Every structure is written in structure tokens, then in C-alpha cells.
Length: 218
Image (cartoon, rainbow, N blue to C red; front, side, top):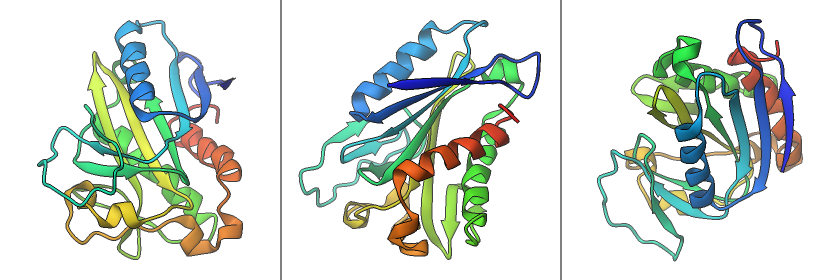
């Protein structure tokens, strides 16, 4: 694990700590986020955790528990908002552990800035991406390239953003991604070519967009 502090753009706000978890088990990271959130106080720095997960289906608090053809991928019932989604290799995830009360933000503002970070990253590659009202995430030509799911506990957020970089999409096709039947997913490799979709290169770029849009280190 590596970490690097980044100064906030607001001198009255604390620095944010960025942690690179590499590839890590979903359930373990989720429990670590809960523990961090339960233990934090008014002086705890916000953190952003970047991670890649082994294959896993996660169920949000609004999931309808509909049966699907599962090829043996683990299923975890999570406490994030939303419905079912898939995480796996080639997907870059950023978990945002932010004290919303201290920041004076609501969930909608955080969601908007997470979406904007992906939109801005794609725009730098000449790709036009949009958000959809009532369906959090980022879309390119009607296909979803980034998923969002958050939980607010004790005035602080955890969970966050999953950005599809270079993935096997067959697990998505077995479910209704985020509860939408027939919703297609895409990734950066499909849109821009695999040579432009290296996770190691995208990680600092996504972090830079997140830090800027979330008001850190600008």
C-alpha cells in the first residue's frame, strides 16, 4: 500500500490522504471503509482509496434480488446505494471517504463531482460522455462506462466510483446493471484502443481529476 498527502484548495479544510490498495478483496476493503468511517471524528482527514477488485457481484440496498445465471462469481450484499453491479480486473475504483458535514456538501453534489471527474478525463481523450438524470453514472453513446454507489454514515461518505478501463463485459450481460435491463456497458479500451487503456497510467489521471473536482490540491 502506498499513500501520498495532497493539500486542499481551502486552507480551512484538511489535506486528503490518497491510498493505493492495488488489487484487493471487495469484502475486506468494504469492511475497512466501514471501520474507518465509524472511527473518524471531526479532525480525521478525508481519504481516497484506489483499488482493483477480483471478480465480484455486489448488491446495493435497493437490489430486487432477481435470479440470474451466475458463472460462479462471488456475490456480496453491500450497504451502498443502488442495485446489482459487477467489479473485476480492468476496472479502476476510487472510494471517497469524505466528511460531508464538514465540507457542507450533500450527496447529490458529491455524485455530480465524481461523474464530472470521469467526463473530464474522457474529454481529454476526445470522447464525449454524459450523465443521466435519475441514473447515476457516466455514459458514452448510451453505454455505461462508470458506475456510482455511495453510503453516508455519521455524516461521512464511503464507497464511490468504478471506471471501466479494459474489462471482460460478459459478467455485466448476465445481470441488469444497476437495475436496468438491457443496459450495455463499455470501457476505455473499446472506445480508444487497448494501447490507450492501461490501468497504471489511468490511475494518476483519474486521481488528478478527482482531486480537482472535489476541491483538493488545485
